[in-house]
Amino acid sequence: MVKPVLKAASYVLVHTPDMIMNNGTTQTTEKVVNPDSEYLKEAPKHIRTFEQVVNYLPNQVYIGNEYYGKLKEVKQPWTDEDKYLTGASKDGKKGEILPQEEFIGLIKICDVFDLVHLSKEFTAVVKEKLTNHKLIGDNLIARLGEGDDPEFIQKLVDDHAEGLYNQDKLVGCVKRAHDVDVNLSAHVMFENLVAKASGLIAALNLIDKNNIDPNSVEYVIECSEEACGDMNQRGGGNFAKSVAELAGFTNASGSDARGFCAAPTHALIQATSHVAAGTFKNVVVLAGGSTAKLGMNGKDHVKKGLPIIEDVVGAFAALISENDGVSPILRNDLVGRHTVGTGSSPQAVITSLVTNPLEKAGLTVKDVDRYSSEMQNPDITKPAGAGDVPAANMKMIGALGVMKKQLEKKEMPAFIAESGMEGWAPTQGHIPSGAPYFGFCIDDLTTGDLNRAMIIGKGSLFLGRMTNLFDGVSIILERNNGEAEEEQGGLPKEEIKKQVAEAMRDFAKSLIEG
Image (cartoon, rainbow, N blue to C red; front, top):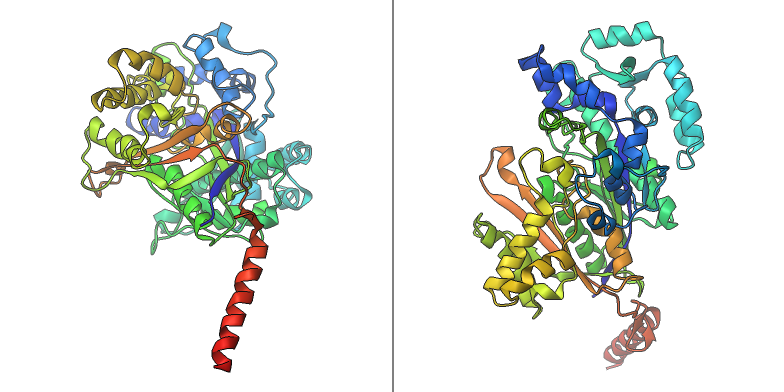
């Protein structure tokens, strides 16, 4: 069986200041329920500039310009003015931070049903900016068109279209795709196009930052929290192939995987199994972001005098391939599962996701060098009363290790400090769930000095009102021993195939000749 590896990863953040107020669920709900609220008056004063977003330490970690270990060196909260970096780059080693106006242009580029209209003036500005973006080719630029008159766009907005705003100015809109189907309403189409556009720029960064041949990708799994479809099949998809089409993955098929916050780890395991079985050699797992979660905890942030930190749409992409002798091995034989019968207590959850797969391999909690679970930025969650989520997860893992006598109680603080990480991902639901560490995991288990890591995805299935069950899956990664798939028993794989074929021919010949 082929040993799958985690070969590459990319990360994108999109600064979306206008979308916070116009599309974030917390803000749009407030406009309906309490349109004259103090929060709506105060919130715009707490929105950060693009420069601040770029210089924010967790964001620089997310795109790979800063190592995640720096977060432990800088005291929280990282929103303090003196904690911001100076002169940081929007171009990251593993991705980029994209400004809103360029992203709106990408939304238009991703439209294939003439649903997105941008003004002529805005189109001209965006066309120039995206022409200078090294990942946006002429074939994509051509999709922008020339734009429309502002009066035409305003008329569409007055008639059910979702407005697109930049610097508080209406610059375009997204039309509904059907007169009565709520699944194709302007609002839903806008959210879907945001997921597609952010997934696309993550895919383009994956190709560029890792020198990947797009034609080598055979399958794409999209694992965001959106679901596209119509009234007859509301979540039918397919985001995966829609992104693959524009990213240039011409030899790829694909499908969507949905599992709330746990979806990226579900998708990682699926991709790993595809490669291990020999079904596909190269599988891309990717996810676009969600506008609904922009400013989700904004009320708590504003109340405490903080900026609205949930001001970015997140996206990522990763490549899972056949063993190259270098990249971390994905152990699809060591997978943790929160089953139907697991239960929802913290002890039961961590047992199923962490210690069960470890014990299957004869390992203890101390044998994992890094745990990546819900890597949510504590700057966001602490003011909202949710605490430090990654730290809480590590405490539960440590406590279970003590209970199973794999750790001494006095060892817990050191274990948590050494094996855990500070969270750096925006609360985009699925984005923090294990995935932010993919890129660093490749570094840690190749050029770094670590040997083993665990990716943990956890999800809240009860949000769909179909079950009260919790969800979670995990997978272990290990340092590659340097034996590429081509070398098996001292012979190249193709030579082995040749010898097997010759032996089969000889056997068949002997049967025919009696």
